[in-house]
Length: 338
Ligand code: PBG
Figure 1 (spheres, rainbow, N blue to C red):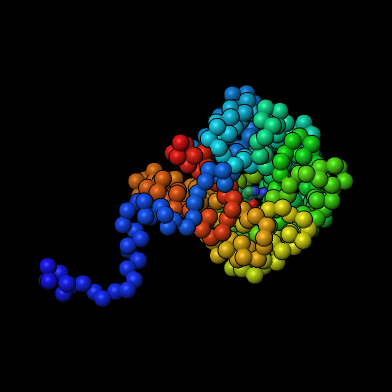
Figure 2 (cartoon, rainbow, N blue to C red; figure 1 turned 45 degrees about the horizontal axis):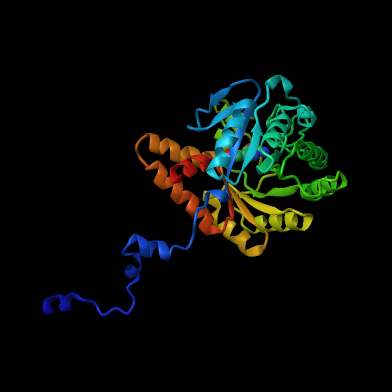
């Protein structure tokens, strides 16, 4: 045994002592991943008993309202924090002005009403943007031949959408358009219509990311087969910029946002950390469709372990400072825990 002594380093600190057993590892674990912190994004379509798979997002489907109700019942049983709804409307209903967005009988408002009636306590997040409603798939009103949405005209429409979504029963409205000044106008309009309790979850730092491709396919705003993706750089943030995210989040906070969101999540962990340290408001992060698709595609090929990568990716987003995560993995993660 004196031999062994010769090999023993004279160390004061041996960090591995803390990692010897699962129990010790659990005791010193710094970040947790509760199901109640996760929001499941859901895609809604017209019809009855419709469940359309989305090729680029294995495991995610577009659901008609009847099946959406069933899905939410399961999600509530699993303890999910809430749902974020996105409509895929019929092409015939799209126009340059995105008029269907202001139809109180439109798909998304009917979906919210049905959910609210059945589940009084469910946290329902209504996305505010025009991309499901315009022919070009831009988030706002675009003049012919240009690709830059008109800011103030679009903000007016978003505020009207916010009222319709609140009237239908949304818990939160979530402007995802990146127009200037929309949070302030939406807050004022909601208050003027006696919706002072409806929250604003602002997509405050939303980047012009290439990772939204599968989502655009899912809501039918741009087809993946159309080739190069739509250019939203005149309103979404430049991926090279860090300070600009803080400008956006601080403006949204001043305008009255209740929760600030960073999007995408995995490629923007530094931004999540920056925002976390610059506000006392809750911070959300959106693990977007492309982040989901990457993990699913590689694991279908047998190149990655889906569950391990899923959990690691979500934990990293929490560790960076997100209180809330919007993720397509929410349901599957919750099922694996229960
Ligand atoms: C648009 C919107 C997008 C997403 C949510 N809302 C796409 C875009 O900006 O083009 C992306 C979500 C995802 O990729 O999962 N209002």
